Image (cartoon, rainbow, N blue to C red; front, side):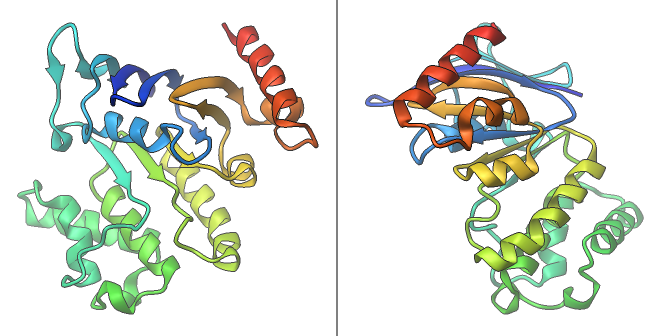
Length: 247
């Protein structure tokens, strides 16, 4: 399975132009705030419409400006985890998860899929609780369950640990990594944290001012200085050289 993204969008004082391809891997979009990471996810999900380009998921065209293709959000089979998890406060955990199955008409299929994801994420004991009573880790797992129950073809994670303290983040990172590896489909994760990208992502695309400045295996990018004691200018030179090698 693969995700191919080649899009451009002009926001007036900011322009986005990104081009990358990923397969059954966890790909990190690494960059500072305002670099265009979350905008890229929103274009893939269909929340934002690019001005031009193509987005192809497993051979299925989600967006093609030349052919006039622009699938609706609900038709893209994309799972999107927002920074704040976006759980419905008046619904129980169970009802929040079942929102992901609103298009499934067969009650037995719906119940089977629900039970599978609840067991996978160990949510049995909190099914009747509401979001306000959940810990940060529980809320994250509920939001992931709502995504996974719909069996998406790609998962988009927008800074999944930004709402968690450092201790809880350290506890949940290995759990999320195991879950995503078992999922076995493309995952694109936005982060501004290099250590987070190093631990979770097999590949990384670094983004600056709406442009991808480097793309490759995470270990390779680290080797050329992402975690070294380099100046900003030194790092720019190294990343530029690495990017040219990838072309």
